Length: 607
Image 1 (cartoon, rainbow, N blue to C red):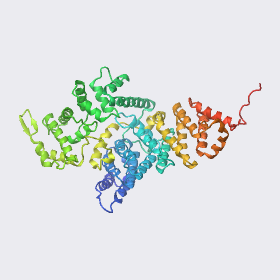
Image 2 (image 1 turned 135 degrees about the horizontal axis):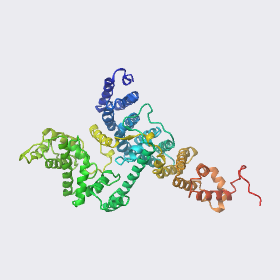
Image 3 (image 1 turned 90 degrees about the vertical axis):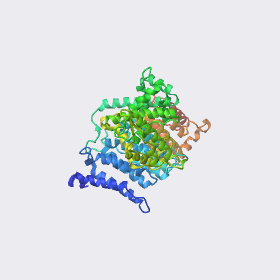
């Protein structure tokens, strides 16, 4: 702590962090060494906590080390079968995000969307691993403002996944019991879901760390910034709907874009290229087939699509990996040729822009690109018993660097070909990305580092929640369906009053949020299901006299009736269609003689 507080100089603080990160990156594998990564991850958590705001200033001193090197090593350790190691990794990631926020947004995106949620949803993941993820999400949800910042910086960002929505959907799905009673997995999910709902109910939230203004945050904005973010979210929703249409038929997707004003008539190549780059939910196979077609519009879209890629600073195999991560390469050779040619032209143009003169022409890049794809297939095809060697790869690419102006052909540098070979050998380019990340095996830190750097480009203007308030209603409106489904299913499967506590608290928090933001649909939906849980309307007329006994012996019916009465009493002005179910319950209770007039109620006027 003394080092980071400045007593020994920033160079010593940097050395401490760097030494621990390097030690974690080079932990040997072997018997008796299992606790070592967890201890190093814990030590890094202590370092980050001790450093606090010192990691932010001056900008650039620590951020590169923490955001890039440390977080990529954390990703390697989080992709594990060891629950303790996963827990330590996610705890460290949460601490880093609390301190750096905007600077760590890209890393958080990769860790949450590519690792934590994938493990939590994975069929092959152990119950212990899934509970670690639920616990980590629960701890994150309780921090004031964190969900709001995830929403404004990810869900409202066209280039980022809907991280807030994905987290809430995962928690809601995890709350669904397979069979009664509730499992510990369901309970942890409900706890995290309740924390999330309670966090959304808080007004005037402070920053995640009020000690200092965070690095990478965009100042100011207020109501105007919130309106801008809402407009971005609306555009993103329309793009997602268009993607659903496009997956079934590119023509229908294009027509929808035109109908909502996101494309002109006739549509331009630039508009379609923008859509294919920005829309979430597109089927990568459909995108690849569309880009590979030879029609004039498709060829223009392919060129524009490639031209919008930024390969600056990427070695050719890394650039190709990034390019092919956005769609699935078709199987037809002519389509492959057209797509790789567009990539080669773009990559060569950017090489010239930055003065990288290894390649004499785009033809050389095109040939090497195709050769890399063949190498990737050869090295990672399980049916291939004889793998291509480095020497064979070098020999296959001799003389491909043709300089037409000088009328001569040269070999590409052997150092480049060697680096490409080893990169492909250790990290396959997933041409058919159908396997889940959990099934792909371990990835080196360099691979995670490059992915985090790519994700970070979408978060250069990080928005603090206090600069864009008032979006909680919009946030809840987008997730109330699965939230209520998860909590209601848990209540249905609960047998005792103790088991009912969490589901009913979650339903109460959801009702409060809906009423606060004048959302009638969630309240109407909730009331119709609460009435079913009471079993009162389904009581036959001949058995009305048994209702008191049923209510007395059923904790579920008692809790549901109490929740229904509270909603009618406190949020009745927001309820619309839900009054029908309420009245049906009142009629049955009145028939059974279970309703009495309150002493303070106004008496009817004499006739």
